[in-house]
Length: 386
View (cartoon, rainbow, N blue to C red):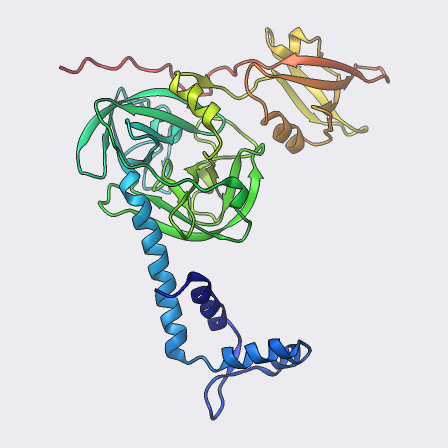
């Protein structure tokens, strides 16, 4: 197989604007004029490129398609299908008229040879008491939930009694570049062969610096599944995220929109250890309602919820929040984005101007755990399996 860089060079050539001539395709005049300003080496390269035949361009496209398939095949042994049994309808409504949120088969990735599986918390919105996992060898095994991260929307499962399970190769986040190819892979609708979608890395350090953004399709078909590079290395775990909300199910409204997110795992050993220990990581909760201040800078506090970190810190209705974690906040979106960087239990410094005062004060607040989201129910006790 030709080197991938050559394949993508040919593919790029296929996108050049062409016009017909007696001797076959030629570069249009405006492209020709641009090329003439380049060096002699560039001229030689251009002449070589324009001599490519339609057959060579078609071959490049076919080789590119093969490269995507081979990348998916490399990750497939570590791909698992997750089946949830029972549960409650914690979230109403359907996704695109297809199925209820959190319902049906979903995707996961084998994280360790001894049976640790990572997936998305979205797959358990219905809070199923029984979870089974179908591994790449076709075996169905029961899995138990360990910890979960309600900020990154990932969770950890454990299959007992297994060893030497295939795990993926991880891509170092330092090597992830904006504009590189990305491929989402999933078996969320129960297909034997995974569905794949191609795109590029649109941005890094999104959603509080925790996520990678891609325009490859991210949807319930691959939530919990891998986002990989052209070599089949794991970039991250596909999840639904909304930079403005940590609510249950938030982010699914963007599915297949060209705005998708994945959580990188390389270098996340401390996070994985917390999940292995059964910890549940909550988003930070302050306990206020606020609106833009029409009379000046900052955000105006409209409500302070009783017995919350905000009330304990002395914040009151009418106060203006002007700084959060050392960053000026003048609009609701910015406030939410900064606050979403923090977990429950972490401390954040707030700069505020008390009602009818001019002097800015600072207070350090330890963020709390948010109350149950609207419609979320306490977890069910798993039934005994004989």
